[in-house]
Length: 405
Ligand SMILES: *Cc1c(COP(=O)(O)O)cnc(C)c1O
Image 1 (cartoon, rainbow, N blue to C red):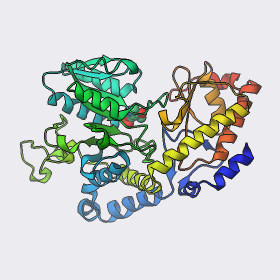
Image 2 (image 1 turned 90 degrees about the vertical axis):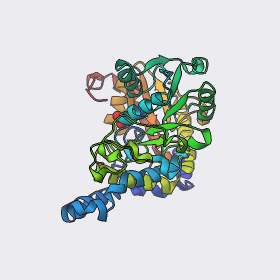
Image 3 (image 1 turned 45 degrees about the vertical axis):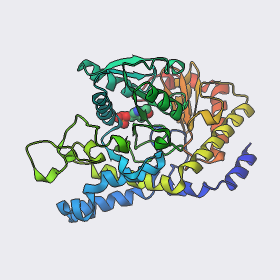
Image 4 (image 1 turned 45 degrees about the horizontal axis):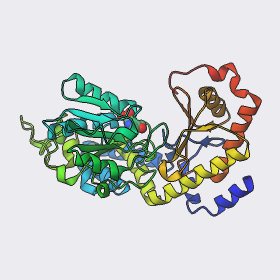
């Protein structure tokens, strides 16, 4: 398999991009879906922002270095990766906060309906943000299993909120089909693209999506806690009103008026002063992903994950795949169910093979294709085989749970 991997690497059109990231020596990083690797250009850019723009130019940089436009500028760069127009996307706040803003906006646009429909097992923050609005009396949460979502779309549903690529299983929703079904039922749709943006082509406008949010620190490589992004379809830019009416979302923030008036465009999603260091790092990541192109990234990630499955088979590893077996039905990850998933994951990490564990029994491997090689697949499979065959995972040190996994 190693020979085949080397042939595949030699023919890989994205091979050279690995050099554009810092991939630590001795690490096979299968967790780029959780925290993407550092683009090598990021430290220099951050240093420039800190030393020159902040250090020297100080407050003038809001204009001279374009700080004030960064949320809109970075949003516009994310837009083509997700099938949006540049003026429909803004980079700001966290995914959680953007969920709150857009769920609220959608509820206000459907005043005679209260239900926000989602699926059980969606990413926790998505469900919790609905809960928070429910506690305020503004929403009613309804959960229905994937196959039952369409029939759960009653005439009381204001919003369908789904995560496009499931964080645990990697399973994709058919965005076009579900958006259409929600619209037929008179509901709006909000897509969480956290595990999709920068990993696979998304066509928000082609699918008629109303709203979307997504994460900056996963496939976009924006760094820990990077700003997230939010999308509002052009046709809703006027009607959508978000509840966090901070001054940066004002039509004229520097008029210092006593009364709030929302900006007409997507800037209305801003709340407070944008985090410039975070946006600067995110911009480097987004530029790099855009340069490579999501179509090419997705094509390679499918090849990587299929090759990884072949390597597992070759090693005689039998694990229960919970991701769809058809690569077209999944994002850039493979997840397996194993009762010892936690300990196996820890034993792999000790060998430098970093995947992750998702409670209670999921072993998750992400294939961020910009910096992974086919050779990494054979090596990861070999390590996994050794961990399983030698019973290494049974060591006490691998079985004790850390607070953050
Ligand atoms: C990672 C992730 C988030 C993260 O939200 P934060 O506010 O950045 O913590 C939200 N939704 C999904 C589906 C995710 O995978």
